[in-house]
Image (cartoon, rainbow, N blue to C red; front, side):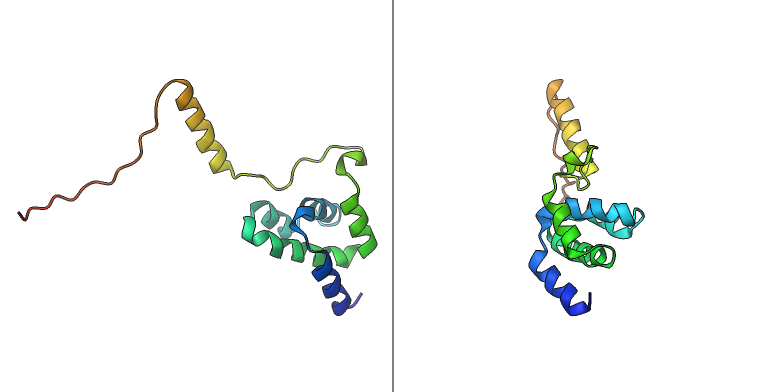
Length: 123
């Protein structure tokens, strides 16, 4: 498949909704790919770019038909459950929520950090 054909396929089929499926397919051929790590750490405005790069990489290893078939096939029917590749929130956000939940359960309100006020010696 030449570059123009790949590019045409990528433009037509890039969709962040299928990024999880595409990353799982990529893991089967390149489990140590830096693209997988970047997809997990990506934030919303990077996902389209990651999806495009993932498709480009997949086209080096799979036919377009195999990629599209993988997208339509339910991952849970493959015989094993696949953990979600792209977390909905980061670990820091989860820790903050857990801390806030714990504080609210024991009845303590978290105080907001206030900056020190500068004393004005001029009157």
